[in-house]
Amino acid sequence: MKKSNTISTEDILATLCKSVTEVLTAATNNKIAYSAMVQKITRTCMRPDIGCFVLFDGGFTGLVVKNFTAQAAMEIYGDYMRNMGMPESEIAKSHLSDDVSNVLGELMNQVVGDFTNKVREQLHTSITQNQPKMMAINKQVQISVDTTMDRPQARRVTFTTENQSIFYLELAMDKTEFIKLHDFDIAEAVDPDDIIANEKAKPTKAAKKSDVKSSANDDIDDDFMAELGL
Image (cartoon, rainbow, N blue to C red; front, side, top):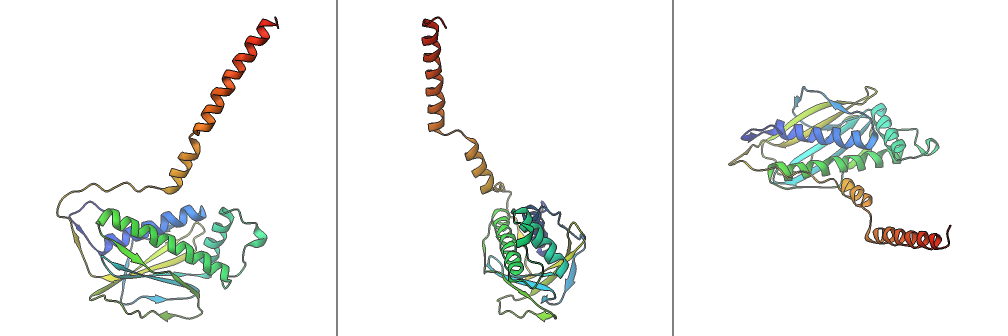
C-alpha cells in the first residue's frame, strides 16, 4: 500500500491484486500480471467458464469474485500440477473436471488468506473469510449475497498469464477509508517455508555430537597407527 495518511478502496484493491500475483506466480511458476487500469462496475457477476467467489467480514465487509476463461483455468491448473511434480498422465484435460475446480478453489483460498494477512499487518484490522465456492458455468450468473454493505463499491481488474490467457478479479466492498492517526512500523511477514528451510539447514545437536565423536575416534586411530609405526 502507498505511504499515505489515508487508505482507500483502490489501495485495498491493489493489495488484493498483489496477493493474487504473488500466490499464483509462486504456485504455478507462471508469471501473472494485472492491468494498471481498474474498471468501475455496478455489480459483481460470475461469468463463464469457471467462476469463484469468497466473502470476507470483520474490519470491513466485501465479496471477491474471480472469473477464468477455460484457457486461463487450464494453464494455471496445469502449471500448478506440474510444479507439484504431478505426471502429465494424471493432469485433467478439461476445465469441467472436478480436479480443476478443486485446485483453483484451493489457490483462491491461499490468495484470500495472504490478503487477510496483509490487511492485518498493514491496516491493523482483522477480516475473516469463508470457504471459496468454485463452479464451472456456461452462462453469466449474477451474484446476490446478503451482506451488511451500506454503500458498496465494485471494481474489476484484468489479469494475464505468461501465455496471455485472461482472467478477471472483481471486488465489491464497503465505501471506506482508513485514516492513519500516527506512524507505525509494518511487521515483516514471516514465511513458514523459510522457517522450515532454515531449521532443516541447521545441524542438530545429535549431528554435532556425532561429528565431534567421529573426529575424536579418528584422532585415536591415527595415534594407534603411529605407535605401530604405520
